[in-house]
Length: 613
Ligand SMILES: Nc1ncnc2c1ncn2[C@@H]1O[C@H](COP(=O)(O)OP(=O)(O)OP(=O)(O)O)[C@@H](O)[C@H]1O
Image 1 (cartoon, helix red, strand yellow):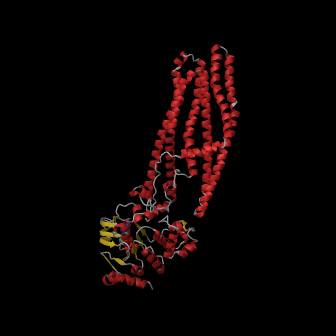
Image 2 (cartoon, rainbow, N blue to C red):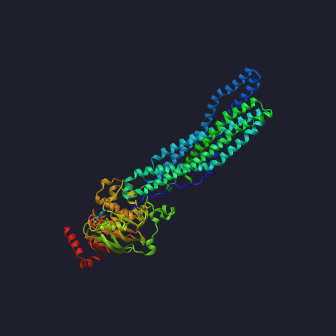
Image 3 (cartoon, rainbow, N blue to C red):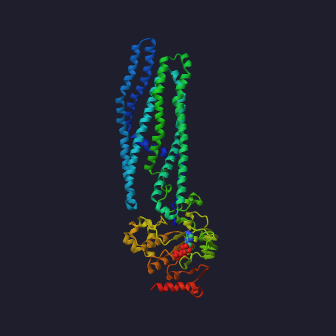
């Protein structure tokens, strides 16, 4: 109830400038490996020649062999084409050998960078850093290497295959180029134009998927926190929003995939169709049957597969490469900057009612409405609460005003409605009638996160979780400086406890703490909170009288108001005013007033006095 797991969904981001940013280092990297590039080019020229011979051989086999009844010549040309395919094996070996000269130095460089980054983080951050980071980064190095190798292979293969095929078409008959080149260029242009927006949408889809997966994992790990904070509905709502976003980004991606299929159709399949349609025209210009068959061989066996591989590989591996390299670069547009990922349990944020900016603002910067308006910290007007339509009201037409800076104690016999009042002010219980305002704002209908920014309600059951001492103490103010935490620890008298646990960075095992120690930790946490209204519902009941006094005095000194459901007379006596609930009405005054005016209060004081012995 005191904090909310808030986070915002990954927002759609525009196509990033990563490509522009990555090009200069990529150019430098390639410039330093000219020898490798030349050798790779040489092997690729051999591959080009293979493509050339495949189509040219078919054309010659038909025109100079089979069509003129010279089967031997026909078979001879086919054999030439076949042999070049068989000889392709050493060419592939040569290409891969050179490829290693590009990918392995890249991998070495990235591994070095990954290790340096992880070590730097480990040295900078508390707790030895993220041990999983090295394995995560090295895994990403492998992705970079594979994607980079795939891209080089595909690009190179397409360029040299297309060159071999186009040269072959030219040699068969330049008129063939008139039919083939326009759709090829048109389709490729369409593909290139859509490359950038497609990459951006792919990135958004990836980000949305990861955010969803991350949220699911975090929610699973934080179920206890979510239940304790009563934010199940909010977690579900956030999950639903992430699902909707993932679905929307996937739909956009599907639309781009359709555009890519169109580009492939225009560049790869339209030339085949046009060639068929143009057969009479080509025949009229003296293009032979063999040349036509050779042209179809180029299109069907070389260009179409190369185009298909190019478009698929650049669409998938290219984007993956950009995303992963972005992460390495740690630059302006990493796919999931920390402020976009769902927050860890110890990072409460204010809610979204005031828009996304406000939603990211931690409690430290929450607006201090109370200061600005001088409204009372709490105002109840004719508030009635009944648990059930026909039940006796627990609180009946109660008026109450607590000023900012005031310390109010609430007392009354067991079951009289003290916790009900605390929950009412905290906004976790709606009145049957009447109005409740906190800091001049109606509390009804506020989101949990808004309520968290306004007040902290501390129940008797102290909630301490597994984590470090600092995590526990800073839960309501994640950006608290060490000095702030240490000051709160001193004020609350929690220093011996923190010392015994091993300091702020020591782990906390909740079950090893006594009830009183847990309460002390929670009260220190509450002291650090930025909310101006603290509601303690018997939150000190397990502390000894001296510790309780120290804690209450420290909490009362904080800016804002303190309302305490008192457990001891000493606690009530420390307050500026005391509200006595008697089941019929309520009486409010100082200790001295109430001794005169309230028989119930006198009874309670007598009872407390007796039970102290
Ligand atoms: N959720 C609920 N549903 C029905 N009745 C409730 C509910 N919560 C409290 N009550 C009843 O309302 C009355 C006031 O309860 P409340 O817990 O506010 O009293 P209290 O003064 O805080 O008691 P204690 O000092 O024992 O904690 C009690 O009779 C209780 O049984």
